[in-house]
Amino acid sequence: MSIKATPTPGSQLISPHDHTLIMIDHQSQMAFATHSIDAVTLRSNAALVASAAAGFGVSTIVTSVAEKSFSGPIFDEIKAAFPRLEVSDRTSMNTWEDANVIARVNAIGKDRLVLAGLWTSVCIVGPALSALEQGYEVYVIADCCGDVSAEAHQRAMDRMVQAGARPMTSLQYMLELQRDWARGETYELTTGIAKKFGGAYGLGIIYAQTMFNAHEG
Image (cartoon, rainbow, N blue to C red; front, top):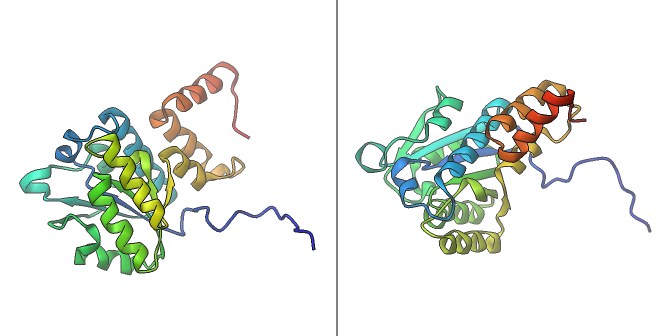
C-alpha cells in the first residue's frame, strides 16, 4: 500500500499555542563567564526569541537565579518583550526543583516545553532531563543558550538530545511560529523582529524591501 502525502504539518513542529517557553537565567553574571557564544550574539538571540514569543502570544515563564544577591538582572531585551511578566527568582540551580516555577508550569498546563538559558550544562540540562523523565516533550534553543566553553555547551546538548530533547535555533523558533508567509496578521511582526535581531537575514529583508519592495511569499 502506497503512502499518501497530505499538506499538513508534522506533529513535532511547534506552533504558538502548543508549548510553554521557559527562559532561564539570561543574567549579567551568568553571561560574564559564557564563552561558547559571544555576548552580542547571545543577547540578540535572546531578544529574538523573547520578542517572537511575546508577539505570537506564547505562554512564557522567565526565571532567574539569585538575582539580587549575585547573578544580577535579566537582559533588558527580555524585560522589554515582557514588561509585566513576573520573573521567578530561585536558589536552585535546577529550575525544575523550584516549587514556584513548577506551579506556573502546571497552571499553564502544556506538555511541550521549549527551554533556553545559561548555562547549558547546569541550568538547562537540569530541567530538560527532569521534565523528560516526567513525560514532557522538551525542545532546546541551542543558540539562545551558552556555557563556560564550547565543549561544555556541546556535551550538554549531546546529553539532552540522547535523552530525547529536540534541538533548534532562535531563528528557526520564530520562523516555525510563523511557518506560512500567507499568515498576514503576523507577517510584519516576524519580518520586523528579523530586521532588528536577525543578523544577516534581517539585513537581507531590509535591503530587499528598500530596493525593490520585495515581500516574502
